[in-house]
Image 1: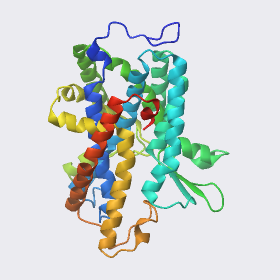
Image 2: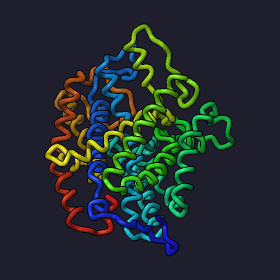
Image 3: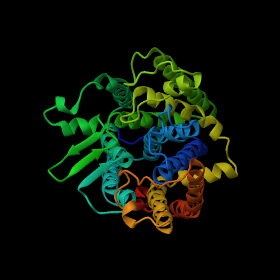
Image 4: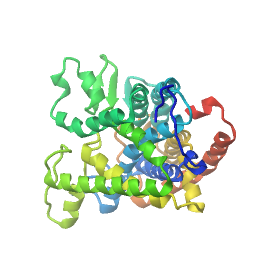
Length: 398
């Protein structure tokens, strides 16, 4: 709770409860590894269409893309929870707000510089794009204001954003005097900044701001005693999953794309779970965050070699994120050069249409993905140990 002096008091916490939550690190690590699969597919797949087009894409390709839907919402949600856990160890509200604000600004700078370079391998800023790190950074800046409010107020604001934003799905950028504002907030698309410069907003900010706010409040549950915490996690997770199934079945609200009965049970199920990601609909968030929460009690028991493997990636998420982009893009560049493709094929930007002859089967994509994960293990373990041994303030920004 927040005391009158502005510090966050955590009464009756055991030593275990005040330390890092094992399931958070493991879950984040799993998410980071799965995320790399999606980006490996982006750079290496020979499939030119939409992998979620179940009428044409194979079932394996559909689920290769669909399973990665868990990455962004769970990562943003856990970022909020981690903010609460890290800021609830005696910091004042001013200190908490400053850390969130500066980290948010830093993430936006990284998105527009180093991370953009990793995706595009060029410095041509005529085409600017912003993705998940931008959304996390902006959400942290917003959260730096919210921390001055009581947790129930923060939760109310977060839930209002997440539950209410789909009511505005029919609004278009053209409906506003300044279309750029709506593109940034709620509508994915390319916006001309001038005659020669365009901004492509891949991750509109709403409802990511709400997801992080809810995750921040969720952090208070993670500080409960283990048995009580697990009961809460199972209850919240199961309720969220049930909520998704019932509301999705009704087609009443929560996603702009209604599902319909298809020619087979297989395709009907695929249509049912195909929810909108850009921006993430209410149902998309329920479909992804609910299962993530409900498996956390199981992950808490994964105190073994497998759990420690995932934890390596989960404890250095930003370091891993930056490295994996450069690594996977670099692997594609080197492979392409060996096969005789020109350098320009891999420096024109991640979003350009791939050459018709470039790419590999899904099985080969998985091999490149596993190779990337293996290569990243030792650097991530090295940096994890650096962060554990040294408590320099700047390490929290990497």
